[in-house]
Image (tube, rainbow, N blue to C red):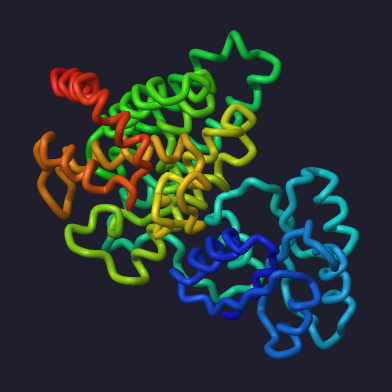
Length: 358
């Protein structure tokens, strides 16, 4: 099966490409409508996934031209838009075969394209990988959708639902930790570390409620990463690493429509694996171009990762982890955040002891 992805956002194209490559779909890309028509002329795809809003020729006009060409009969077109019912109506007018409203799970996109074009392989772990893993991943997706719904209702019932938000987010974070590391404490610990560091560096960051939720839900995109990769005891292959790295983009995509997470929360989700020296992902940002919330979180996350057992290694001592963080100042980590870590080390260690006693 051959798929053409048309979107002016290279990050989303990378996410979609990786999503389809794991089920052995041949993927081509275009950044706009005219480029897409050139790609179609070179090689006829089985399906085209098109974002509606693009500079120049938009997705609606591209769909109209595809559907008007008799030589392209049978090519399925899926339109993507954040305009809800209006977008669906316009998609129907230009003859699109399907419409997805943003944000959506890439698993939804896999299902839609597979249904329209056929020939799509299995999108979940096989029976050998464990039917329980399939059920868990599907349930986690439902949790994430329920979370989005709860947070949208906040507009009219904020005071009544505030406790429900916290409980739902905490429940989702716990479910994610069980899937990822086998523990249910990592997200809570790293949230506390990040809040402590942020309080020392910039009180405004602590006062932004979205940052607190972003610290907790930083790895929500791992919902879409198979357990065989998350829990692999040895090094990841190049393809597995590429797939693992999409969790930042996937998380941002999943939570992008949640009003309560706009701002620092989404910045943490997307940018928490960026590095001070520019060698991180997904955008290769460097220095102060990286959002402060993500720079703070990077130190907090590394601290907890190094002091916790993982499938591929045993935990470091607190002192050894601290020395690694200091050594990474100016390379992996923001020097200012490392200074805050040194100043707050006793307080951070008290958090670790508190969780160990639970």
